Image (cartoon, rainbow, N blue to C red; front, side, top):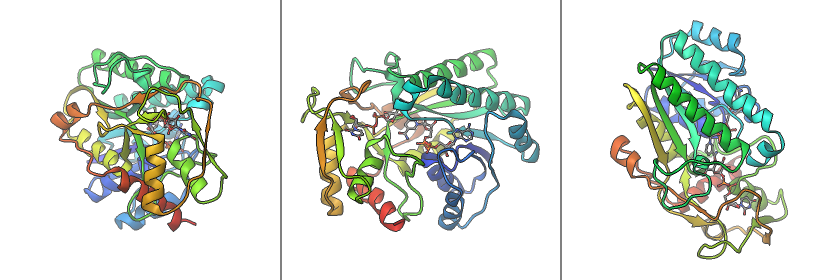
Length: 330
Ligand code: NAD
Ligand code: UFG
């Protein structure tokens, strides 16, 4: 089976490419490098011992993407490409609507034209907005608190309409919780092109001395220690979830949470990181970040029952592997 992976050089995409190649899928990768680097290709090759075709193109560029469909018979697509910085999406909403929506529309048009109506889409726990009940099941109400989240919600609606219009489509929508950690080789990891927004990449910059101090956004939430609680999942577990999702692409439209079901606070993450890696992460408490919620964690039982998905790695593995990636790339 040949899988078109858009955004395949990014954080989650690169780990998924490794899983796909290690499990004998053929892949074709498309990425415009807006948030990734060409060196990721060599590192995927090193880890897997396999090569793959790569196209440095924008998924929104229909003519360029169509050439990929002409060059390769695609069986299924996994669509990671998109912008993901919540804060930036508030400042530049049109940039987010344009890239995230248009890339998905163009991809689906070509999947339709080349009669390969099978898609796995990267959605996010952000579509649950401010949760009314926890843990979150897939049928919880949907709502968003920022333009990035709204792009994911609109795309989910668009894919549902597409499926209603033509039930030959087969679509799996994966709602990721908070991926952290890195491949055990230390060759690929979370390596954004600009200053990170997310907690773990920021911790890595502080632990390595590149940034002086971590700001904890609020210690007055209604949580065990007052800091925000999230469901952190090892990126390799998350990547494996995509292989399981591919098995579901026979017909139908499915939604799955990919999380562990366990919530950890910001202080839990810092303390575990310091303990397992024997490094200090200086921090200070600052104001809450606009749009943040107190707690968010998954009920992962639907993915477990229907896909056979279970996150294997614990928080210590996540913190160790994240730091290993930094050490190996110093
Ligand atoms: P990432 O930024 O590391 O990877 C995205 C990749 O897509 C990058 O390599 C980027 O260069 C590429 N890209 C972006 N727009 C493109 C375009 N128009 N054409 C071609 N390539 C393009 O992000 P990630 O963390 O790997 O996230 C992957 C997907 O998962 C995204 O859709 C994101 O919204 C979603 N997601 C991520 C998280 C998270 O915490 N990382 C959580 C939930 C959902
Ligand atoms: N945090 C800090 N300091 C930082 C960064 C984050 O205290 O410098 C805190 C946040 O306030 C939050 C927790 O760490 O309590 C996690 O924050 P992240 O920015 O790492 O992650 P979010 O849960 O805010 O959002 C992430 C992605 C979204 C995705 C969501 C899915 O950024 O795209 O997970 O759950 F939708």
